[in-house]
Amino acid sequence: MKDNYLIDAREIAADLTAFMQDIIRIPSLSSQEGAVIARIREEMQKLDYDEVTIDPMGNLIGRIGCGARVIALDGHTDTVDVGDPSLWDRNPFSGDVEDGILYGRGSSDMKGGVASSVYAGGLVRKRGIPDDVTLLVTATVQEEDCDGLCWQYIANEDGIRPELVCITEPTSLRVYRGHRGRMEMEVHTSGLSCHGSAPERGINAVYKMANIIADIEALNERLEPREPLGKGTVTISEIRSTSPSLCAVADGCTIHLDRRLTIGETEATSVAEIESLPSVQAAQATVTVLDYAVPSYTDLTYPTRKYYPTWETPVDHGGVRAALAAHQMAFGEEAELGFWVFSTNAVATAGMLGIPTIGFGPGHEKFAHAPNEQVEIEHLIRSAAFYTALVDAFAKH
Ligand SMILES: [Zn+2]
Image (cartoon, rainbow, N blue to C red; front, side, top):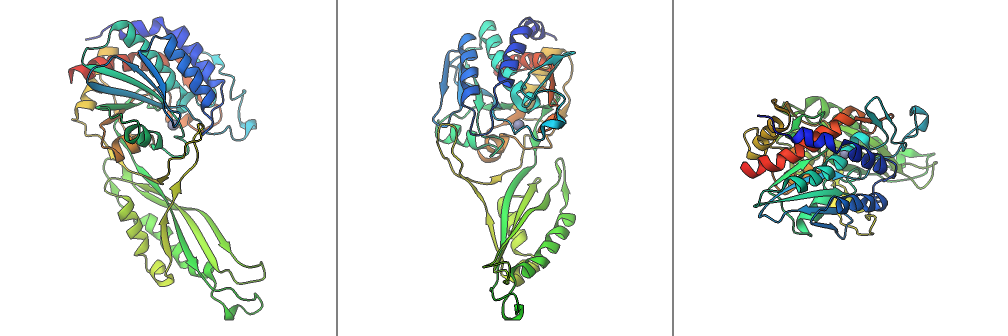
C-alpha cells in the first residue's frame, strides 16, 4: 500500500528547502537559540498550527489537533560550533544547495529534522488530523550540552507526556529504536603538600592517581558487550592537579571520566564499579557524578546530574510497529531498523521518563559535528512524508 504522502511532500519541497536554508543561516550554539526559535515559530504560524508556544526554558512547542492521544516529533535547534574553519570547503552558514545537497553547520545534526517535522505539521494540517490525536512538534534547546534536559523540563514542568515521541535526529532514513547511555564522573585523590625539595615529607596526590589510571584503562578492556547495543566504554578525558606552587608536592588530583553505558549499566552500577577498583580503595579516592547547571537563552537554569540513561524500545512495541507501517504507507517498502551510535534527547523521553520513543530523520550520523556537514534535499522531503504518515499510523496502532 502506497499512499500520496510522498507526492504531497514533494509539492512543498521548495518551501521546505528555503526554510531549511533560513535556519542554517542563523547560528544557534547551545543556550543561544533565541533567534532560530523565533524564526521557526514564524514558520509554524505561517503553516497554520493551532497553537505555538515557547515555554519558560525557551523550547518551542507547536500543536495541531486536540485529541487525547499525543504524539510528539522532537528536534533540537542548537548546534555545536564550527571548529577549524579551514576544514570547511564553504561558509558553514551558507545553506548552499549543490546537486541536491544542502550544506552547513546543523544540516545533519539536526536542523534537517526540525525543518522536515515543522513542514510535516503543515501537511498534517492540510490532510486533517485524526480526531483522537494531538500532534506536537517540539523545537528544543541545549541538547548538544546536556541531552534530554529540555524534555525533563517539558515533561516535569510543562506537564506534557506524549504517548509516543519520534526523535528526528539523523538516521539515514532508517527507523531507530535505541542507543547507549552515558555519564560523566570525576575521581579525586587527596595528598599532603610540602616543599618540593623534600618530597618525602608529603603525600603526592598525582602518584596516588597513577594506579587508578591504569585500573581504569584495564576496566575499559574488561567491559562486556551486551546485545543489541554492544559494549559500554570508559575513558579518561581530562586530568588536573592542585599544588600550592610548582615547587611543591601536589595535594589534589582529579580525573574526568567519560562513561558510555550499554544495556544493564546504570549510574549506580558504574559508580560502584569505579569505587570497587583496588587502586581507588587503596587511595581512598572519591567518585562524584557531575551536575549540569547552565542557563538557557531565556536565563532559566534547570540543574540535572550528568547521567543520560541507555534506552531501547522493543521491536514489537506499538510505536515501532507504527513507524514500520508509516514507512510502508509513505514509501511502499519495508523500513530498515537500527540504533544510533551517538546520544539524543531520548535519554530523557525513553531513559528517564519511560515514554515510548523511536527515531527517524534526514541526513547521516557521520556528518554530525564534522566539517562540510550536509543533508540530501531528498531526505528532507522523505522525512516530511514519513512524519505525516506516522501520525496516521499512530492513530491506528
Ligand atoms: Zn543532535
